[in-house]
Figure 1: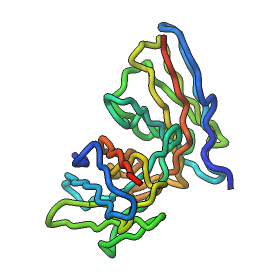
Figure 2: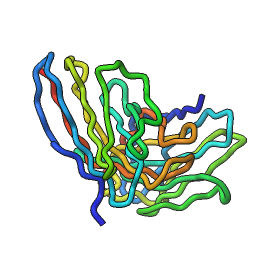
Figure 3: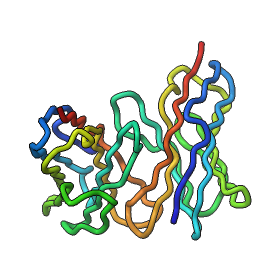
Amino acid sequence: AQSVTQLGSHVSVSEGALVLLRCNYSSSVPPYLFWYVQYPNQGLQLLLKYTTGATLVKGINGFEAEFKKSETSFHLTKPSAHMSDAAEYFCAVSVNNNNDMRFGAGTRLTVKP
Amino acid sequence: KAGVTQTPRYLIKTRGQQVTLSCSPISGHRSVSWYQQTPGQGLQFLFEYFSETQRNKGNFPGRFSGRQFSNSRSEMNVSTLELGDSALYLCASSFEQGLGNTIYFGEGSWLTVV
């Protein structure tokens, strides 16, 4: 069964520092992977997704993620953190031929001034 | 283009009562899915509807049910509420079903059961 595991429930970085949020997946078939962000008291917003093709995926707000099959990973990065990036981030995998998504437990990102 | 709209945003219910939550998908979207988000269990898939038919269901008891109308709007119902049903219920929509589809989330309905 497809699943994702996010390493680190909390990540804290300084403003301007590199952001790295880790996600590993488990899938018996080629996975379709997503990163979503959730700001307080809001729903989830799509940052980026990987389906097929280029393994380096660029998303909104300067985020990108690289699909690495050999490492079963889909880590999210941003070169320079901004205070507005503070939020909870979820990695997800699409399951079956429908819109059933399996989410990781989430990583709360704190950005220090 | 309006996003996914969920009503009500906040509600408080008593144990044993039932609740109905509503979701209006993005215009033109035919698939609506529901998720429950709690601090302990995280985000869990409830069910998905496409063209008024339930296509998939998560591992939740029969107290959780839903339906979709011909205009793609959806409702979910929870009967005989329990304290553990307190959660953020998120609705998401997409144009169609299928692997890799982007689903767009609403802001959710916060349910507190007392």
